[in-house]
Length: 173
Image (cartoon, rainbow, N blue to C red):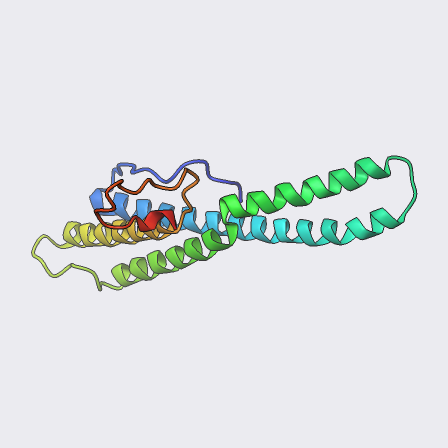
């Protein structure tokens, strides 16, 4: 299983709109599954690196060997960089959010396959496929909003009005 570089794209199908919709939804589910797996691996690997290298630091300081200063500096650098990357990419939060999204997408897809989404109109399968796509886009929009709502702002704190008027800016918290 490799890393997929881009999100799934719509592909027309010779079998029609419903088949294209189903293929797209299955691609989206696979995309979320693969991303959740990679975020889990990166979270666990980065945690193991911080623990193991951090635990090795006291041992390195107690030993005498050529290049000791460089080894200690390198270990400290590795711990600092790994910790910073964990904070920046938030692999723990992303792993949970991506897995929850994949589960919800799978639930909606299976409900659609069982006939539980929007097929009660006279235009049958295409109406049902539209209901499936609407549900998938709602789930993806919610996932995106959830991720970005807690993203820390790296910029300077917002400037308050000079006259003290207006509403307080809670984004700077």
